[in-house]
Each structure stands twice: as C-alpha cells, then as structure tokens.
Amino acid sequence: MSRFVKSFASHSQDFKGLTLKLLESGQTIEQVSILTGVSPSTLYEWRALE
Image (tube, rainbow, N blue to C red; front, top):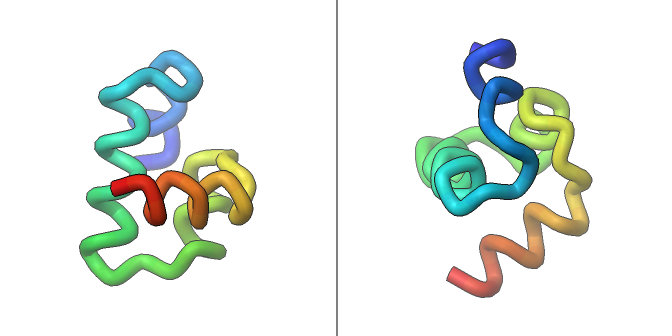
C-alpha cells in the first residue's frame, strides 16, 4: 500500500483525496502520516479544510 501511495505526485488533488479517505476509514493521523509521508500538522489542516 505505501508504494502505491508514494506513486502519486506529492500533494496532488488525487493524493490529498486518497489521504483523506484513509483518515475517514478509521486510520489515525499518525498512521496516515507514516504511510504517506505527510506531516501530522498538514493532515490536520487538510482535514479541517474538507
């Protein structure tokens, strides 16, 4: 899964969408951060903007 996630261009709309779906599926901020390489603070920001 992490190889698939990292195949996306950094911070593209598709990448953001996939990342937010991971959060919606019950993954924690920390888990998604490790999987995607996106900082927790950025994940909180993206989630707040949705």
